[in-house]
Length: 264
Image (cartoon, rainbow, N blue to C red; front, side, top):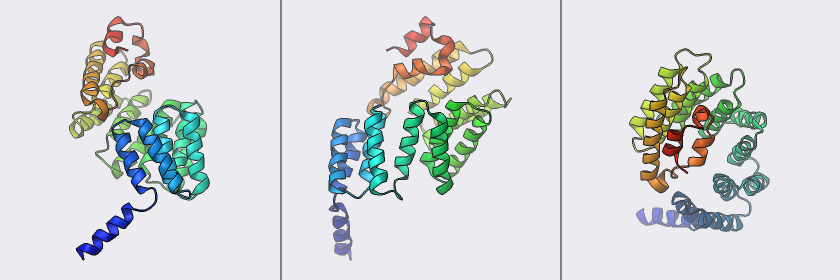
C-alpha cells in the first residue's frame, strides 16, 4: 500500500508544469522574483490549457507593479480556462483599483463574490477597494467583508489588519471605531507577534483620531519599521515611499520627525 501511495505522489509531482510551479513558489517566497517569473512561464508552456501558472505569474508581476504584463497574464489565464480562473478576475480587479478605476474594481469583485461568497482573497480585495473608494456605505461593506473573512480564517493577518482599517474608515459614522480598530490590531499582534502590520495599524489609528496622537503615530511607525527590517524577506521589508504616500499620514508629510522615522 505504501508503494502504491508513493507511486501516486510521484506521478502527481511529474504532471506537466508542477515541478516548475513548485520552483516558482519557492523562489517567490524568497522574493527572487525574476526566477519565479521564469519558472511560472515555463509552467505555462508545459500546461497550455491551465489557468493556474498564468495566475501565479500575474500575481508576481502585480507585486512588482508591472501591471500591463500582469494584466496580460490574467487575461491569458481566463482565455485558456475561463471557468477556473477566478484569481485572474480578482487580479484584474486589483489592477483596476491600482490604476484608479475603483468602481470597476468593486463591481468585478462583487461579481466574483456572487459566485463564490466565501472566497477569502476576493473578500479582502473588495474590502480594501471599499476603504479606498470611500463612498457612502463603503466602510460598512468593508466591515461586513472582513467579518466574513474572519469567519473563514479568524487568524489571517490580512483579514485582521484590513478589519482594523475598515473601522478607521468608519470613524465618521461609528463612535466606537477606535476601540474596535484597536481590538483588531491587538488580535493581530497576538496571532502574528513578529509582523509589522499591528504596529502600522496602530499608527494609522492614532493618526485618525480627532486630535492626531503624534507621539503614538511616530512610536508605532518606528516599531513597524523595526519589525519589517528584522523580518527581511518574510515581511517584504520596509517600503518608505508607500508609507509616505499613505493618506492616513497626510498631516505629517512635512514633519521632520515623521520623515526621519519613515526614512527612504
